[in-house]
Image 1 (cartoon, rainbow, N blue to C red):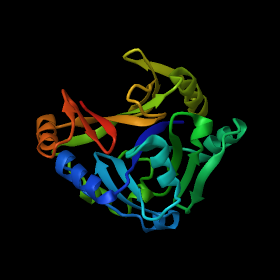
Image 2: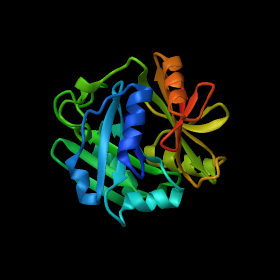
Image 3: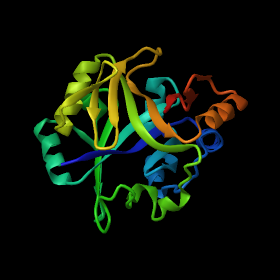
Image 4: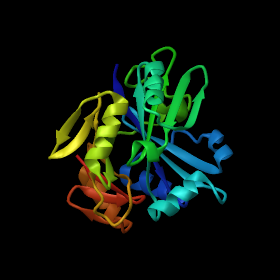
Length: 255
């Protein structure tokens, strides 16, 4: 069984400013806005990055789960690490065996979704989904949450993929062990940090060093024009350093 890093979700107090920054800095385009998230008091936008997706959600009303998460983490930031599997049923059984609570799930006929409680996984929301149907397991195949034609919005002039997610934790090794147990993938190591090695990327587990609590603190993106990204970020006053920008409360490392 394989597991891919397929989608990263961010949460923002306001969608429009973050959407504008992503377009102007990373050069990516909106492929879909899911009307279904309105049920949860949210609005969203999804952007292809290569054959993966970046999503931003924002609350449109008070007392939403997304709003509570913003309060807990002190503002905009990472929200969910969303993976794609090739066989959902054994993944679901494994989560049940481990006694992990599921906070969100649905089956549409073409898509199976399983979102786990961050208090049980540690670190961040961890989601395991499976796309079904023709071409479902292709790297560039369909992905229901991103709409019926997400590939048409791909633009790789500046960014070409999401290589890693960085989950910051109070106890990184404990959380890494838990994610490894859930995913049934032995832990590896990246730059001395415990890491879950997926088919197309990694999830790193690091200490909380930015004054914020546990959560998805950063991502690594592969680039085709890092200098253009850094220049565009500088122009609109985003914090930058060598090969890193700060956007939506996230460290975005440029590879």
